[in-house]
Image (cartoon, rainbow, N blue to C red; front, side, top):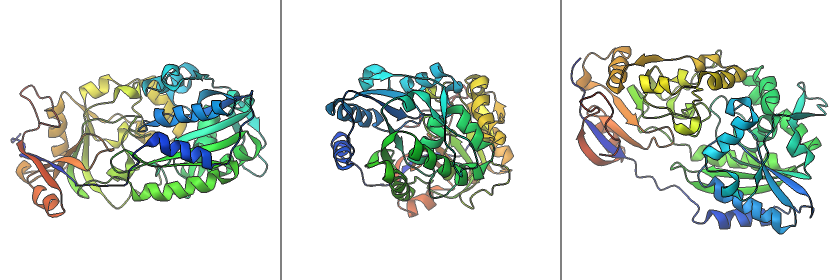
Length: 415
């Protein structure tokens, strides 16, 4: 194999909107919601399985707000079948994100038990978390963003949490059984029933900017949760991070994981859905994707690994196949659970990707390396890409970089 090309660390000069004081913005959103809680009651706060910047700050302010009204808050995991679809596993996911009882200042009560709610004209049964339902009220707290499986008026956010998050494995399986239409078309109907017949009193939505920092926090009472979700989704679409170029021979990703995206790598960034019957986005177009690691916060859940073409042996060794299988099978999108080609080391990932992309001259390869899909604005680019990204306004940070140590492992992203 010919020596790899030189690489150059570049960074797009982004200056997206951001919140200076997340706690203050959360307090203002809660105060403006018009929601009042009954003193002397228990209130459930629903949290999901995503890594969200400053989520602990937002939740602590919600906990404080609940107590100021004389009620007692507790947290329930609202994450469908994630965490291996077990109560202990879902609590462990929260704790791995720094959302334990000590950090949040309230109890966590985790259970997979659900109660049935009236379906009315909804074509699928409706269920919701039993512990949350038995409380006097439930508060949804979630990030709102474009989904990795589909696009519609409601994607990943408060409406999805009301339906699939609180519905646990039962509701997740019921909706995923319909494929993409179950998420795009039926999920909002289930959420409507949960909001109509359950006890959800408040939704708190967070939007992150292209630098993975909060840029909006909104709160709404039951009747406006769906409208707030749609409003924040429109803002989130404007903030969606993107690769510096939209046509590549090879994309190397240092890490993927559940704390980065529900399918490990954001499909909106890499341009791959890998769902039978669904058409991939026209851009970006990437011939080969190699992934080197699975984040510790994923707890071995490699759902979405099929989006990559090649992974390292260390990646493969980190997979918990039981947890991954539960998540993938529940989703119904089994192509995403396929194990990619496994290379012995990081250098092997690169070499196999070159071969898969039919690159005959490595010196001319259009290759990019990113840490993860949360930060595609910062990248290593090959010689062939450097003039293009500099012309588009990227700033050169470091040059003449080589990908691997002598032992075949990746060099640090920041030299």
